[in-house]
Length: 387
Image (cartoon, rainbow, N blue to C red; front, side, top):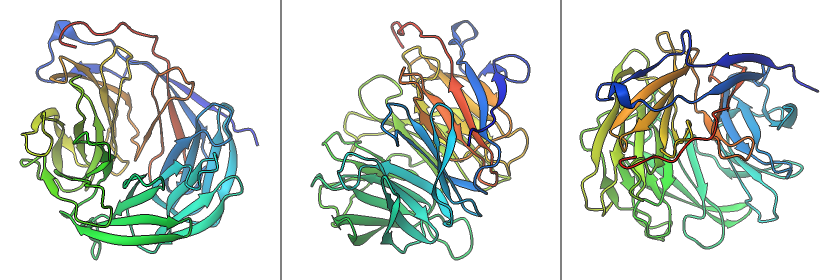
């Protein structure tokens, strides 16, 4: 069916004000990003925990996926009209899902946290396949051992009694329905990302304050490297990107749980040697409630500098902001632009139109409202000296 669109313009006027954080020179503020906020479905799956984005129908446009934990199953929305299609109506879907061509047939498959385990759905008929029976909160998918097959790493969270995030689960693909499972002990908490931090051609694993070096043996040992010795918040959301333009991947962390506490959002500057050098912490937001269950990196105002975005979950104190931190001064100065005040959770950064402008897609985890912030910022000029 054709979904009714609810439209609201988001600008830097009214309550959506951009302001400089400490250290941001008043005469050096970057131009704001511009977004068009849309509710593409106000009757989506119940408690949308899982989100994803990919071109599912091979029309050259990125489509959106949403998975509900308390009903409504897993669905996708066809870009540009956002017609809803059902993948699995009966399942319950957790906080993470990824899209990848798992069987190498040229069609994107879906790997999802499904119930108390991990499953993958085979395109185009979305036949489900079992991967593992481990309760997890975060997953990353890639060819971690560079053998041509997609593998999975995952971890749970330690938020509630009886749960632990102190184990990294590693699933090496032997065949489409056979996975070899290994585990690695890690510091307890929440949050996971995959990135080639040491620039050796394979993806490493980033968690809360440490990263694990991938040495090519997926089922062997993963040496632990510390990047944030002063970072004490164990439940985080993780993003990576080159924030200062030196060609190295930096790390951004936001405090994701629980409500009622305070911490900071920071990025960690990668040294020349990621394994032995000192990572320098730069504070982006010095005092914020620990419900920032999303952090991401992209150039939202199209000025050539990667920015940071963060979003507070709905159980936080009002306002529950979705905020873009505009980068100027090589990641040393930031201007905060609030683009929403009703919160969000585990958002996705997507290029909906193929024009290089990053938009934001998400939903609050106790909501069935699917939201989109389409980036309508005009193209900008490349940064000058000092970025």
